[in-house]
Length: 149
Image (cartoon, rainbow, N blue to C red; front, side):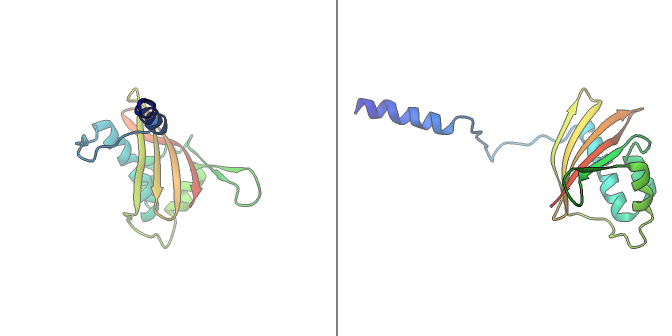
C-alpha cells in the first residue's frame, strides 16, 4: 500500500509535467495602448485589402521595405514579393470583398515597445506571421509570411 501511495502521485506528476492549467474564472486584462496600436495596424492591412483601400494599406505597410513570403505555388521552395508591387494590385481590385469580421489574432508579442510579432488568422483563408516596427511613433508591417489554409 505504501508503494502505491508513492507511485500514484509520482505518475500523476510525470503525466502532467509540462502541462499548463488554465483557469476560466481569471480576469483578462485589457490590451495595452501599444497592443491596441499594433492590432490597428494589422487591421488596416486586413480591412484595407478587403476594401481595396490604398490609404489603409500604405498606412499598414512600410511599403518601401516590406516583403511578403509564402510557399511556392508550384513545387518546392518559397516565393518572395515586394509589398511595393502588391499594394497597388490589392488597391486596384475592382471587386473588393468589403470589410470583414472573419479573423482572429492568435498572438501579439511586443518587445521594447518598438518591435512586434503577430500571428493572425483569416478564417478559412490563411495564417499570417507579421513583423511590425514602430517608426516615428507609428507601427508598420515590415514582413508578412503566410500559408494558405
